[in-house]
Length: 589
Image (spheres, rainbow, N blue to C red):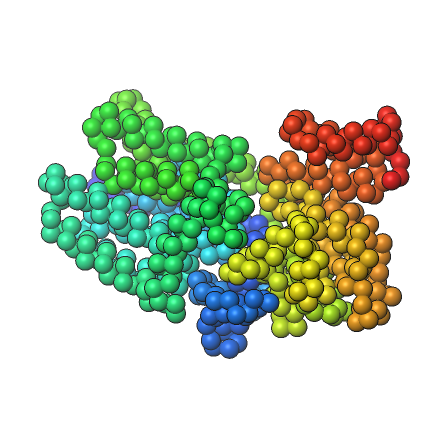
């Protein structure tokens, strides 16, 4: 009997590993999406610069705001990106995301398995938490924050179970984190919340004060490790200051450049329904344990802190959803095992217990593949690829003005021949303010183009966040000082009408009104992405109107008015169209 049990034990463990690997592989496939983050390319350019020069960045070297201070808070991540690109191009670079997401999922699954988690409960709940984090599955440094946050939690709780030596991993993890991403400050919060829980356990006699002292020493060493980076105190403490600046968005007192950034606004249920569901489930399990007086204080502190993070700023909801996966699967299983029959059933996992979770993940992969969201390389319609080719080949006169989102890509493609005007890492309040005036076509926009010596403009035609039409396009189309020389379904390129551009205009000038064809295609593409952007209907209506498609314009404005019935712009445009085109028939303007 003993011999049989001994021989069967490794077979059972091997089976668990095989099922686990199958689930992690499915997660890898689900995260295998083309590069689509705007920030990826300024990070690539920074990594290239650091690698080639052997120097860190302290100035905004790649933009017209070259004198502005720049802290490259993710310099090690930048080097990794450039190393991957240099080795295997965009193909290898795009594999970084699914690898890190699969590691996160594998760690969370293993943690639950080692504590008796049954795959019938654990896999669906973990899948829910990971889907809740999927909006941040981008080639950006927060992927390292995802992974390192999980590792910090693992070693904190392992230290409680196995002894303080597990906590010795915390300082080197923080040292790595502080050089990969400035969000390392979040590690302080994770350790602090656990420390509060250990204080409670020591006071209640569940742990010793000596153990608490050991944790405190490791915590101090971990805090000190965050300062070992090329920028010293600015990375951990500067990120803390940035957090308080971000909170000013809620009061309307945000620094220039933060106001209007949708990442720093509170979320709504329509934007992140999975986050709301995850927090509701987690809260319910905590209430149940509170009722039974089995609540774990550290977990309660984590829940309170994560709730504050997620409900105050939408940018935090993905990290919170992911880290809920550390607690929620086992918490739900504990709740379900309150009944004797369920407890007996879940206590002995059998192979079919894996099937619901695997089938759920397979369905998600199938759906993503069917929607065309999976793949490797670069998602070309997110970036002005052809426009950058046009500028690099034909070399219109500098200086360059560009859309905020595309600054990173353009510096990657065009530096050092061109400096971008603004990008996702800009720190110049002056350039942020100027960009707002230019994009919105506010009073003085022409004077700003003259002031900065702008001779070439590479821009999108819709605001990326809201999907609404970019007023700058109207100004450029109507201004005789500017000519459209390039247009495709993604970007437009305008050049100043002067002697320097005469030869270029003679070869490539096209009717400026063709910019509205780009607007039409861009607005349609933004709608297909599935995010809530009702103002894309305004862009569709305005573009169709300027292209002479009265019927389509009227339909678009009516659709928008159905969403926002009080919108005066849509009301006035509908009235105008009805006067110009009675019956809504198609006609030219």
